[in-house]
Length: 471
Image (cartoon, rainbow, N blue to C red; front, side, top):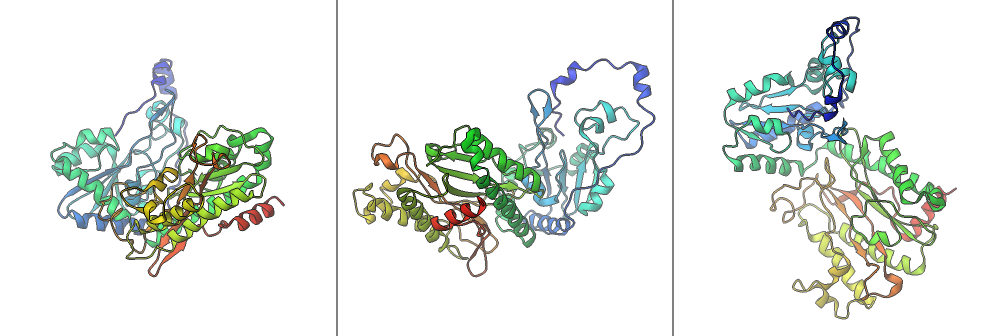
């Protein structure tokens, strides 16, 4: 429902009547195929049934959203809202899903302008000449196995429905159509969707494994491209290398990659990726591919640019790897979500005491009232993963960060140590080191499965892997 038209439309030349008439004839029919996994429709129907079961007798409205304008010229490449995608499988812009009190679903979307109509060549937002062909509603409905109606009918349908819960702030046009009579009701819908999405179904797990597999190929590409980075391409070259894999074998990157060489690896969210890559440095690569279904991976590895760790780099790397191992060892149904974080922190506290950075006992370092070890490991040890790289962020505290792990959850494990280059409490040789190993784990009925196990973990295995890729 958003009309986010680029202002450049105001620069268009006037259309003489003769041209307008001339443009009406001589066009062959066009239609694009629906890009939908044939299996997703049945899974989406089950998800909708779970959601409506939480709000019996109510209308629920979930929009896809619309792409914002970039540089006062074109639209950003569209990425639908994750909740809409989860409930429909649709990846197109502007759609709005409405679930009625009986649980029946109707998807309202644009009918593509037909050849021989003015919008076909004048509409910058929906016109085929401007944006390419799209599937019509009949084809979309058949692929998604859901009733589809023209978007123009949505205002009348919402008026007739009366009170409805809406997933707000996704589409301003839809927000304006649904009165905010009870803000808590809308928040409850958003929270319910996040809670439901915590548990991945079989199809989702397959998509996440696919995203991880493509990401592994991207990491291999980056290792092979290190000589070009050393020759002057730097972090930019390596980011482009990974992004090419993401666009070739997936849809795009799942988030802005972190390609951090040298001291930039200690910057937790460095993603400008503009620095040089130099011999003797470590490269921290945190990246994930988002596949066509919009599920993403999220993996980190630290790579010695020369192919071999120095003794000090190896010692710190192996400390981080042991913390990662300890965290993974806690992953099983019934464990508390934060258990794996505390397991990793116990390893870090002991390691930091051994390094002489913490001048106290391990017990004192782990004291909840002190937590001095956090100077060098400021972030948590992981998060849920799925359609969003930080998935289900609006889930209830009791279900997520203070809840128990359940079979079907997918999460990252990523404890890391970061020694800032200006930290005078650490020896000079440690300053500027940033170390993180990040895996993507599925909670199974009896433990966990490492979806990213194809990548090496130990320092020896990283060196052997890089050597093999270098030929």
